[in-house]
Image (tube, rainbow, N blue to C red):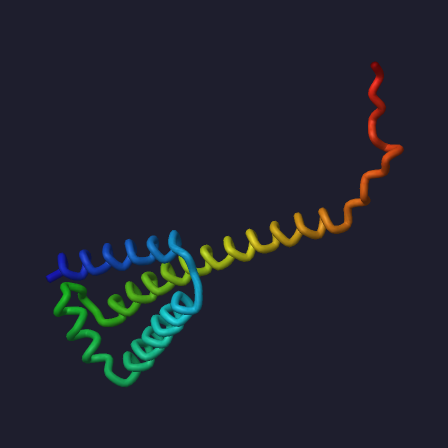
Length: 120
């Protein structure tokens, strides 16, 4: 059963990479929030039902429920890093575009007297 968990982790890593490479938007933000909310519920349920998480961990071939939750934390963190990277990259592109536009807007207009003279 451990192989099932390992395959699931590999798929989760691939999904995180796909999130990092593809475009963002409202749907991307909504998925991110849903995943974060799900993780909060998982952690909260582990306080009230630790036996369930130990049973689930044993089912997938992991020794303890705390280890399973730690693995889920790592995967959640990986997804967070991937989506944050994508968002920061978008913000950097926006700032660069704004800086270029501001530089063009503030540049002095060229004068006729500043133009190089042509000698024949």
